[in-house]
Length: 133
Image (cartoon, rainbow, N blue to C red):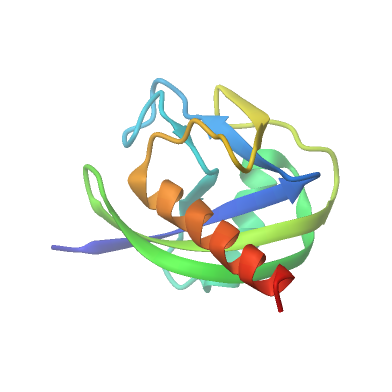
């Protein structure tokens, strides 16, 4: 089975995470609440895809980001999603591809995709362990 690589971005602000409601007409995971992201293009690095997708989906440019983890997401295709945590950016967030984007508490969020739930739990686990050091 072919693996399709993707990038997803966990945008954080004031103990909240930005989530999207995917468009009804999306081929994969339509209408679900998810962490925003998109497919990598042929020959693109993860960082290039991250910058391109952020501009295409939210019209922002990250100024502080770090790779969190990579997880498989079996949907209509097998996706390998590379998750990035973004804490600073330039520009004003505008939803250009999703039906809507909204800020949600890190503690209680309505994610529908299992890989996204695991990635956010991993972020919470790591951030808590850094606080206790």
